[in-house]
Length: 284
Image (cartoon, rainbow, N blue to C red; front, side):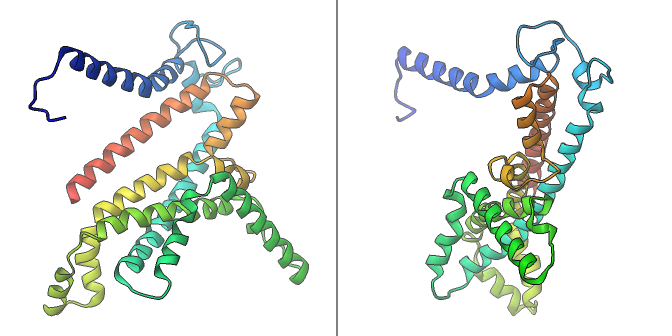
């Protein structure tokens, strides 16, 4: 609708009601989760039993808070390590792939581009199962043929990194490619005419232009890796990531410490999003 046209009271009421209901639906579960992290109850649910910090700082014996829960802290560290390597690999490979598809011409470019997009439309469960079967098959072949046992082919930390990297790198490629399409090649030609080397042009001109997209894609890749569950479930070994650990706790019965973990994740991801927004605006 044209915003300058007069609007009826019914329209204004409906519009405001929609905005309110939309944000209530969006944030109400998160608010409830955060509130229950301070509930003085042994169960991660209502009713409210009073305010308590036990699920953050308690050191037993009846209650173990998050900051003294070795299992949850270890899974958080594992998720950070996994997300770090996945984001680094995805940014490097995704940026190179964006240069390949946007600046080069070669046979079957369209077909290969569609093949690159395939991991985004394949369900994560299928990706996890297929990667697990492929790794087990390769490990069995190497073991039976050469008598060498390679731990990498078994469910492990690095297999999780490889599994997440296989589809997160595609997302990075799309983000960086969208930015690269707006780049003016005349800037590179001008730099070359002024005596810059090809490496210098890429470093000081092209990558500087792509920096906001690379930083943003890296941050989102980190978050996608940190919260990934479907693919990780089939590839994880003896070091579960945080989503897998939370799933096991919910399945077997948990305490409000799971709400404390959720609160810390909400705060952490919000801070990361703000930092990413700040640096993206600053470098744009």
